[in-house]
Image (cartoon, rainbow, N blue to C red):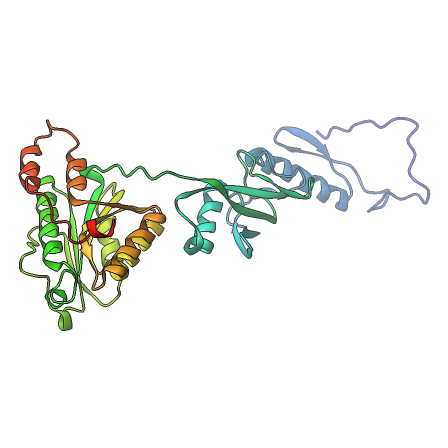
Length: 353
C-alpha cells in the first residue's frame, strides 16, 4: 500500500499551475533506499537527490584526509590526480593515484629528482595552501584528493654518518685489482697486500665479496696474490663504476645490506664513482685508504679528501676488521688478530698527512 505524506493545507502550486520540471499531474510515490522512505520528485530533482545520496555513501566509505577540502570529490580508486612536484628551482608536473599519501609522494619525488637529492640530508614535504597563499608542512594523514602543488625542502641540519659496521649488514667490494695496473699504480704491492688481508677477514667473518675487473681482455685478470675463493660475484666491466645491473641484483639477494667496504684502484676514478653511486642508493660506504691507490698520489689524495667531505667514511683496513668483530670475546677474534699482528704498510699516506 502506498503511503502518502500530507502537505500543509495552505500550500499552493506556483503561478502558472505547474511544478518545476514537470506537470501537476506528476504523482508522488514513495520508494525505499536503505530502509528510508523518499518521495518521488520530478525527474531533475529526483536525479539530484539520488546523486547527493550516492556522494554521502561514498564519503562514508572513503572519508577525506584532514587536509582535504570539504568540496573535494570522493576518493575513487584508480583515478590519477595532477600534482606539481617542486624541488629547489625546479617544478615538474606529474600525477599520482587519488588517495595517495606521504609515502607515495616521497617515491614520486625520488623518481623525479633522485639524482639531485643528497641522501644524507633530512627533508620535509610541504603543501601549497590557498588559504595562506604559501607552503605549509604536509598535514598528518594527508591524502591527495584534488589537483595540488607540493615541494620537497631539505633541512639545514645534515645527518651524521656514524659508520657502524656489523658482518650481517656489510658487503666487501674489490675493484679492478688487475695485473696490467701493477707497474702504473703507486704502492701497488702494498695495496695488494692489504686487499688480500681484507678478503681473508671477509672469509673468516662470512661477509659477501663482490669483485670487478675493468676490461679484462686488455687489462688482464685480478692479480694472483688476491685470493678470490668464495667471492659471491666476479664480473668484467667497461663502466668505471662497479654499480652494474648484475651487482645491484647480487646486493638485492643479500638481506639487510647497509654498508659497503670498498677498496681497489683507481681512487679518483672507479673507486670514487662507485662510492658516489652507492651513497646515492642509500648505502653507507667505507673506503679503505690503505687498500686503494691511483697512478698519481695527487689524484689519490684529492679523491679521498673529496669523498670524505661528501660523508663517505675514509678509514683503514685494521679499523675495519676490528670494528667488524667489536669485542675481544668474539669467536673469530684470534683469527682476525693474526691478520693484523703486522701493521699494514702506510703506502705513502703518512707523507701526505
